[in-house]
Length: 232
Image (cartoon, rainbow, N blue to C red; front, side):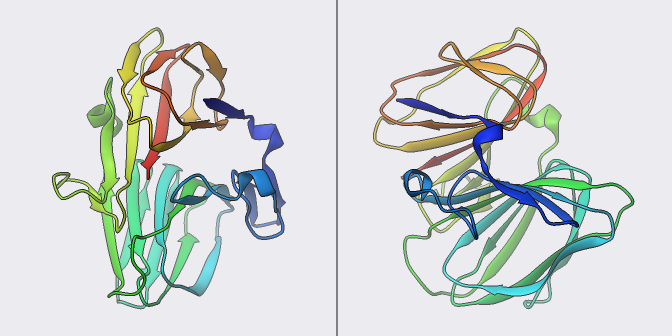
């Protein structure tokens, strides 16, 4: 099953300093058929204006993954972490029993990012923040694990569920196969470019929900970058 969710059908809107699209029910956008996809509960496509951002606010019992597509953001949290996350960077905020954080665009150009929420297997625990940088060259022609809840994925930012967040870049005409577990929930978005997935066309920032498939064949129609969640 491959369910296409074109960008133009997503919820969200323009809030002045923030342009956002919601792949799943979030805030004022509520769509029963798009409440979650397995452990994946939120995928927001955000554009933050220069000199703006999310002020400090709390979270608990959720893993928040931020993938910076373009520009940069400044992360600060109540654990004392502070970091500049540039394009190609991934951060994981495991909120655990509770944490406050802010994300701010201090640059003179908009910051574009995906913010992804994945439910942890257990509630509570010590909150934690991890940042990683994954250059596009490291994701060229194959999926690279950006964040993971599996111990063997030691280079990835840690998650608190049996999920993975993966990144891939393809050049025009390049093909690659991914063989998922049929019982898993996959959700992917081209961060840039156009691609065929088992012959189904997907444009930049479209959402694609996948389940009960033995194989996914990706064929780039131009240079493209893809972010994918493989979740229980």
